[in-house]
Length: 324
Image (cartoon, rainbow, N blue to C red; front, side, top):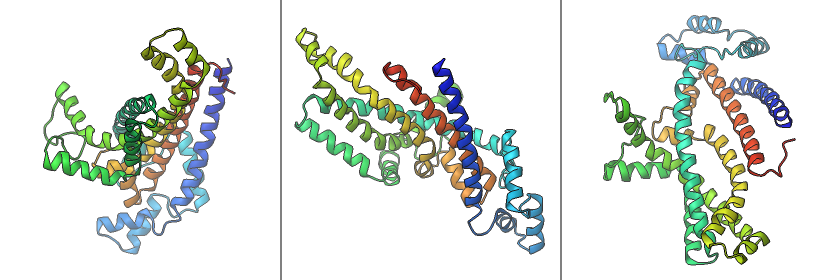
């Protein structure tokens, strides 16, 4: 019952956070010079004042800002995020077309980062101060320090241009019309370069955190007792050290999952991956305010939900933690 009450309260807070995001984003977007009517008029080739005024009237841009905000909040409360200026489609429909691509890429990157980071961190924790520990530390620092866009471009140059092992851009081969397993394999091959570019940056954090946590847990009394009982070293490391070291990793993974949803803009644009990141960039360049606001709202909701799942997972992993 305590957990259900906690979830209900967090969902209420999520709604309040969403409202705050809508209000702040609504006014911040309109601080930029110009408006969507000017952009659309320029794209259509009719930039005269009368046409711009008609566009402003059509989209309600000629009304006072408080009136526009109130109308928009009422629409959002009914699940209507408005209509995209550039695409002339419902914003929610446009976002739902791109969101699965971002979630797929982020899930792949997160799994690779966690698995690789835990493995490297475990290797480094075996012999602290050794050459292997130093190598893992240097590698982690390198992955963390290199800019993602540069790493992505170098990956395209090496694996797509020089070696021709992997496709450089997009989510699938244009015009191939694959179906079934062939399409799955095609999407997977396109996902490797952007997914690994994202994963390597976060892998560094997991490796360092796993190393530190395992070294700390290895010095505790229950680990010494397990070794004194004659339990094999492999079992001690897996069941006693690694299991207890995973507690801080759950929190870190939850934070990274939230960051990945809105933080893959650079990587998606480098690899032309049709996700939320590239959609946000297109909305900014087109001054498509409803679409940009819709992306902010959906991202804020997803981040809040990821944080809620992280808190629940933390309490399940460690019964000593109570949700309050």
